Image (cartoon, rainbow over all chains, first blue to last red; front, side, top):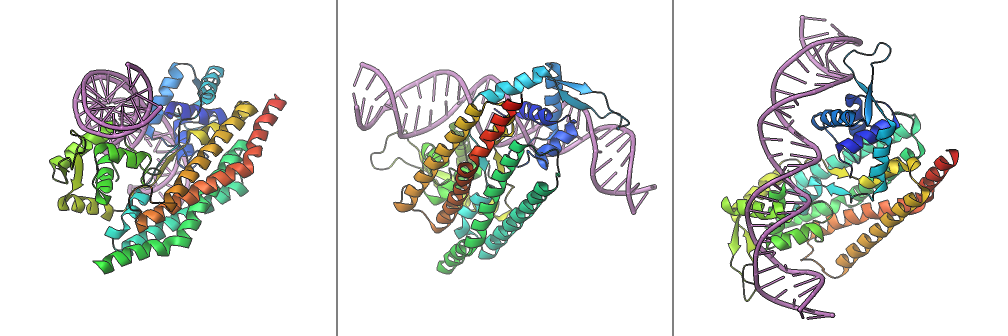
Length: 183
Length: 183
DNA sequence: CGTCGCATGTAACCAGTTACATGATTAA
DNA sequence: TTAATCATGTAACTGGTTACATGCGACG
């Protein structure tokens, strides 16, 4: 299912965290390339999870900023998570505005198509570099074995995307060029 | 932006279609691996697009089922599409319940992890087979050049995902096995 | 002393899904 | 005659985003 509630529970199953830290896990951390969630959904989710006893607030520890609320998963919460995990995963959803744009390369200038592809190549390169950093030193949390597997999957897929764009970018630029030549 | 309205306009820019056929383009057709939309969003979108003159209903042609409404994009509609295309693409969004499940391989039985990965491998194989069919004969529509590029991108990425799972599936199963052995 | 990153929370809004209601056509 | 696919549409819901409101702490 993986609604925000379940995703938060998942993050907390790996380590205690505040709402702010959970969002970082979605944004830059180990969940970043297959999960998302804004504050506006995380904080209410946390409140609900606390309400049904899946998590508890662990009082701000040793001199941490007051007002910061660090959550910890309860045994009850672990059961809830296990329950979601027991049912078969929902299909992946991938939505790409980038690919949609490329579908209409004929209608756009070769320059803008090239810039768009070049930007994307730069983006993938940056992501891969960041991910490879993570592999070396333990950049975020304690990099469990399953984390390594998922990490490797992401690496392989982004690598393939990057390679494809680098090897074939001239083709899509040519498509645009040719279309404008015809017209 | 690629909301449903824009996506419908995109489909209609390639060829005239009914609401039903647009959904097929999202589900099985050339847009299937990076766009989606249910009837409940497509039909209202079409109504709106017709309202602002971006598309027109082309009366049901030569003996087609009465009640079927085939839409055609107007010059105005093409401008609207071009306008969306002119602004930089929004970031891709990928959400994977599957990867989320795998992150917690430690908490699940090796059997269920293995089944899940095996299912996913079968799924990717089926998708790749279907996509390769499309390349040979012109399975859906006239396979433009940019379509071929996007198609190739999808192929490369799914191929990479499949290869990774096949090459590394033993690792994630081992993670689960080991976790239960420890416990 | 200002501004950036940390930190929490709420309320309005919205895009899209689910479920429902309906019916024709085609193939077993 | 029954099931599957084609075909359109609406209404209720819901999950999540955006924008706002607020304030502390650290660094320069």
